[in-house]
Amino acid sequence: MITVPSILKTEIQKLRGRHLQARCRIDYSDANIDNTIIAWSNGTQTNSYLEQVYNGIEDVSAKFCSLDGSWILGEYALAPETTSEQSASEIGSWSELLSNPDGTFQDTSDAHYLYGKTLYNSGLYGSNVSTPEMSVNFSARTIADLRISFDNARMEYGIDFDVIFRDIDYAELYTLQVRGNAGLKYVTTIATQNAVCQMTIKFLTWSTANRQAKLAEMYTSISELYNGSDIMNLQIVENRELPEDGVPLGPTASGQCVLSLYNRDRKFDYDNVTSKLYNVIRKGVRVIPEIGDGTNWIPLGTYYAREWDIDKRSLVATVTCLDRMALLAESEYKVNKIIEAPADETFLTDTDAEWNSADLVGVIAVSNTLRMVVS
Image 1 (spheres, rainbow, N blue to C red):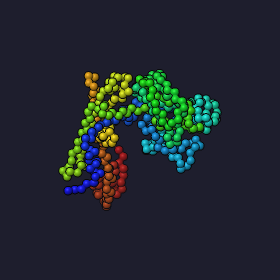
Image 2 (spheres, one colour; image 1 turned 90 degrees about the horizontal axis):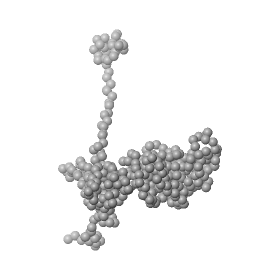
Image 3 (cartoon, one colour; image 1 turned 45 degrees about the horizontal axis):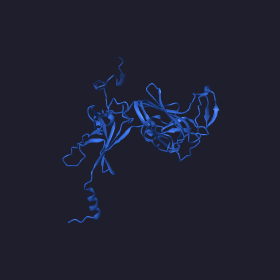
Image 4 (cartoon, rainbow, N blue to C red; image 1 turned 180 degrees about the vertical axis):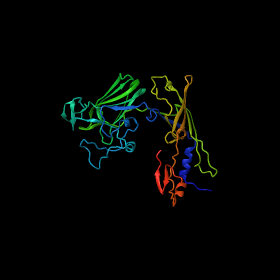
């Protein structure tokens, strides 16, 4: 008989009658699979990166220094410059223009400032800089909520700004006027806007004087979490071929996830232009299933959509996914060949006959000397 502690008995009893649940998160607007996303600005500070305002990372990596007179050696980090530094550091996009002493950004199409003071008002000395604006263009989609992140490391944010939504012809659909914001992240819902192709933030007032406007994230990503009331069926298949010794390190096959979701309000239909998911249901979206008891959740892997089955006559939308192993099968790998230099060879010759018997290319032997053959 093996004696076990009472706490183990208690934990085992908790398992009786436990009902496991499933949930699944799908990221529809991953910038890695959507090549229609393009960011632009009317003035960007060197070593800040517009493409980082839509990569899904809301927090910057460090307090980055700037030539605005505010940084202290040791407390601040240098802005990423090389490609490797850029991929490892998140700085977002900084405007070229500094805020005025009162934090405002006024229209300076004919004025040039340094530390909030006007230097000159002539456009002859460089390109004109207007009120900072940062925009993201993307394929037509429906927007009903908004999430904007500023610089959480420097504790700076936009107080007054406008968010402008435009269609494919750049006609203005809706403008959200934000006044008196006091947070590093601005989150809100708006009236549903359909066929939005461009989102622009126009900065009016910054939280700190004589600073650039700093934006970490502005593109509203689409990520939805589906729980038990949404999931009709979830199947996870992991194929693994074990070697004879039984150690699970042998050849593996791609895992598969088949997820069937309740098509409530026909939100998954391709032609439903009023759906939040319009024009974002595509091959390659990231699917992350989990299983748990409602409190503790265990991830079952990360999968990528390969095929969507959305039948107009059915209440169910099914997506079939494979894990990253399937992506490796589609990648082309070329094996590099190492070219080795030939070994040195030494020829000892004493006579013209030996010279002539040697395998020489492009030269001839004449009286124990080598001469180039001129064609």
